[in-house]
Length: 166
Image 1: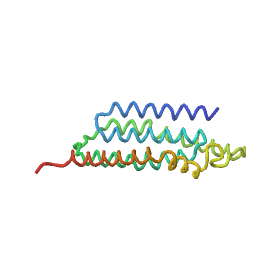
Image 2: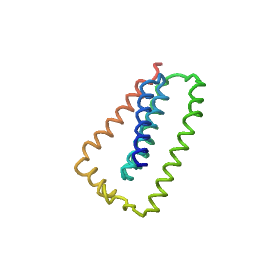
Image 3: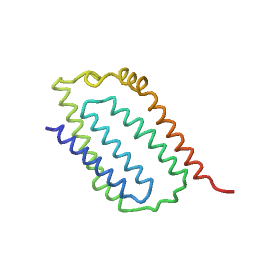
Image 4: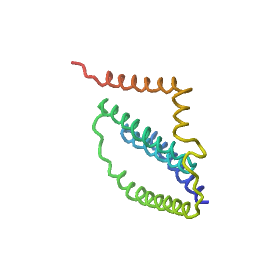
């Protein structure tokens, strides 16, 4: 029952983050909303028992790719962001209590799972990191490399667009 509740909480958080991503006028706020979406998707993967995919989601997408996005946004010199007092009040009123409640729920689920001793070894259901790496770097090596080249081209395009004429 608690897994269903957590699933809907993180699903609603992902949808709210996606709507906020589209509603924001400033690119930095949109990128931060995308980080919320990525984090809630990682929590959904944890609920599915795919710990490796959840960690990769946080490290690669919420970490590296979003840092790249923020870097490109700053490189494009989007202008100075005006300070909005309303968003910080909303964060204090809703964000921190929600974060506390979700943290308590996750801790309770983890303690209950360990007490029931029904834990499944990591990778037993979805494959070990070795099997995932073999699938990623053998049959899907070309799409993986093409994606990395496309990201590199996007960065170079942002640098060219941001360059100021002398």
